[in-house]
Image 1: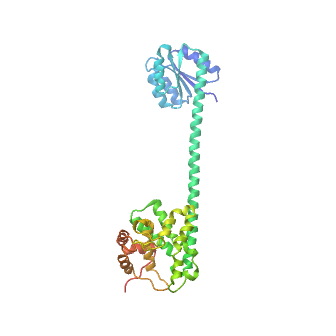
Image 2: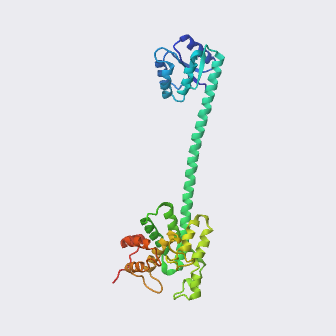
Image 3: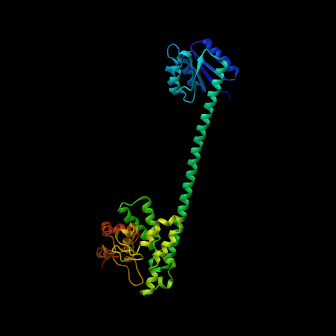
Length: 351
């Protein structure tokens, strides 16, 4: 489809000369003798290129240029000027004009300038359209990738939860221990100001804290009586076994350190590495507190669940030895009812 060109010049003879040459080339032509007439044409027609005389009575081409670009930003503008006024034409280019044509006209030169200007505009518009389409494609692909990652992450979580539930079921007395301690960990972590990815990583680490028990035999894991020394040494291997499992899985590497350290004590007497104080990863120090909460308030083969008051007493007794004192203080600041809500459990009460 040939371009539509508007010629704006107060001299009718010049307009007719330009329109005649352009029509022979197959262009669709409009002409206007003033800026006001040109504005009406631009308001009612799609104009691809405007030939605009700089010097016109009333509003000059320079004065009209800004309005023209506002009315039709995509229109190519060629300023018409005398040789003596090329500086003004150059200034117009800074104001949005694309090129200029010198008087007196060389018709062939004018046609060449028009063809080149329209071709340049076409390429710019194609490039802009390409960029827009590319951005849309990137946005759509990003959305698809994000959706796929969310689905994959959901599948991972379902798989991990199913695995952990199987492990919990293996230790019949623990019920949904791993899921409860995950919820407790999130409550304590949020209260401490942990959020976003850090909270998510910590929660998943809590869920997987006992994954290493896969490598512990049932004879030891399910023994109803107290473990002997050799059995206890075997049981104490489970944090290292859990670390070895998780550190080899790319999307669970961040949880591995927490799993390795979840039985370390604040005073350095825990296992497997005897870490102390702030050498123990913060998620592991947090988990140590909530793991004790769940262990004490759940039925075990060797005793019934203890009341929440016993947990408070234990936290105060082991503050600074087994537990980080600052974390204990934050734990104790959370009402009992919140722990019950999060764990979906009613702690027994002192009688």
